[in-house]
Image (cartoon, rainbow, N blue to C red):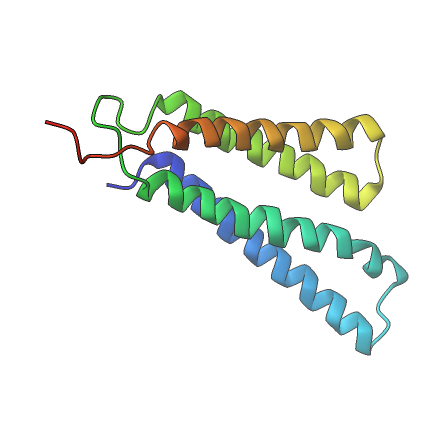
Length: 138
């Protein structure tokens, strides 16, 4: 059964795919028909949503679900840690998109990337514990 954390990571990644494609479409339309000069300011946010929002989050959600499970309980690690990954990652990503759109304070930009980095580190720790060999297990 797919864990709730994976479901929400994958759903969020699909939402970011939709947002990224929509913004990308608007940018492409602007290349043909000048809509508004602000449209070019959307390009960095488009990149962040496509790479971090869609690709990386889809990979993390899938890996959290599909990686081999530990032989002991909890089999995917503590559930709260999976939710922490989801929360830190998505809150950090929302802040990152906002900072790229509105050129907010440098501190907010650093905090957003710090949240994303923290979530990736927690995710790596969760996955590291699940990299096991079953060869010598009795």
